[in-house]
Image (cartoon, rainbow, N blue to C red; front, top):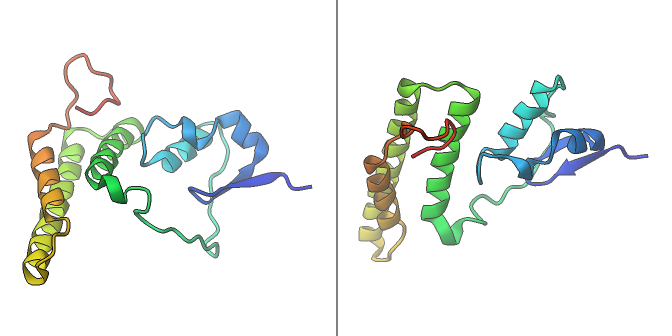
Length: 154
């Protein structure tokens, strides 16, 4: 009798009882991104082991669900990262500043690369989107507002 299942979105194999006892990945408070990592933390807190099988192969067609909402997807990914590192890694202002700096650099580099690609090809790509994201994050703070919940990035 089969006693385990596979969560296809994350490639996690577990006992059915663990799924019912610890809740599904969809109960995560991380948002769209980091939900599988957050679920593993919940399971580990209850004393169960989390492991992986390096030989396992999963096909992931990256970006398929976020192609039409690229800006929203990148904003959500950043906000989920902030929430995750605050909640599970006790990330202070210095660590969050590094996360912000690396993300800013990534948005700017991608934006400039797309500017060059658009100039060479004459076709619009994602330069405007990534430069918008860079400006969005530049104006944003990673510190919680006074009275805000600890996991609520502002």
